[in-house]
Length: 188
Image (tube, rainbow, N blue to C red; front, side):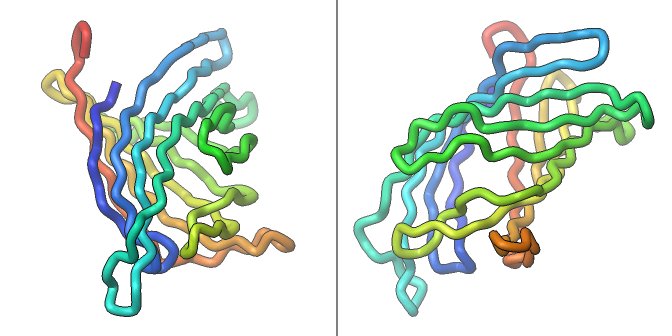
């Protein structure tokens, strides 16, 4: 389990300020001769605040707490020998939640780091000002390193607005880096 990560960030081109924390757990590992799969469970506490023209929060905020389960599946490509896969959101208990959002992924080692590239495809609903949503997606590069009994996960993400008719992606300019730490051991 990765511990709570408490953050404040801007969304929707700086029109929303979001306070959030989350816990991440891994479950249901299944291994076959050609690949593996597992679930990732995210417990998210989030409150979104629209910002006025001076950049101040407009109260009250909108509580967007939720539990999300992603199913990750990876297999070895016969043509390249590389580990490729995807994930799908299979559960989301938020009232407006939509299931089925997917992304393709590639895994590889870079020195002592496991690198996971999440490649955008299609779109999902991203938070927008006024309690609305907009079509968008994200690309994410995650690096996982184990050193001195600690796991460090660093994720760098970039979000894109998506034209739902053509699937053309336009960078929003929102890039963020998230770093999580966890100790390895029994009960950790």
